[in-house]
Image (tube, rainbow, N blue to C red; front, side, top):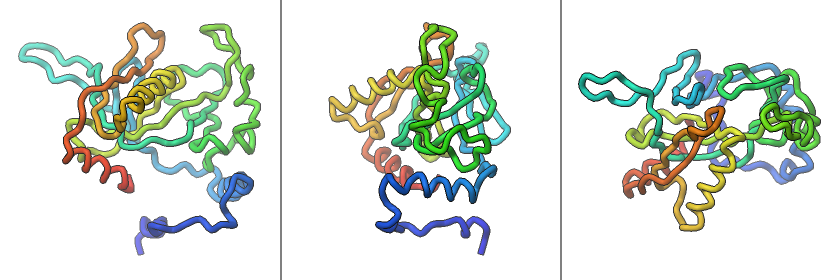
Length: 241
């Protein structure tokens, strides 16, 4: 049996009743955290927006997305990413960096939570057993250098899984909607919902707000997918990647 087969959980496996409910969630996280503490699994291919440009990062390699240049013209960075939203983490991701963190920095966070409830299992310096009562997750735990207002030392973000609209067979890519863009993302999805538009059935234009001091994403409707492409997207959403 290969090592990859050892980690597979059979499809359809249901959590027993005695393990369900919010009361036991923290206990489960604590035991699993001890079992996998300090071990960070391979990174997911993702989109970086460092420097106000779109980059694809996988492992230690980074590739900047460039527009197709006209004859005799230089290549320029792609400033509008046409993407299909395949899936999204239903929870807000939480990340904590001590001191000042600049968006696009490649440092690993001191503490993070992918479920917004408890720290991730690989985190060594867990700030608190549960996110809700963590001192770093409280308003006033930090003061914004830009606005001077009380904020949380632990940042919230939204994790999306996207595919390039021009190649739905491409590898799944992670895209983080940082705290500065969460409101815009929420408004975009709300506008789609009010019209009955499924976010995974259309192409979304992802661009940068040129007025922002740091890279901040904006979102806009581009076009609907064909029925064939929509079926591909739903199929990809069920894939292991």
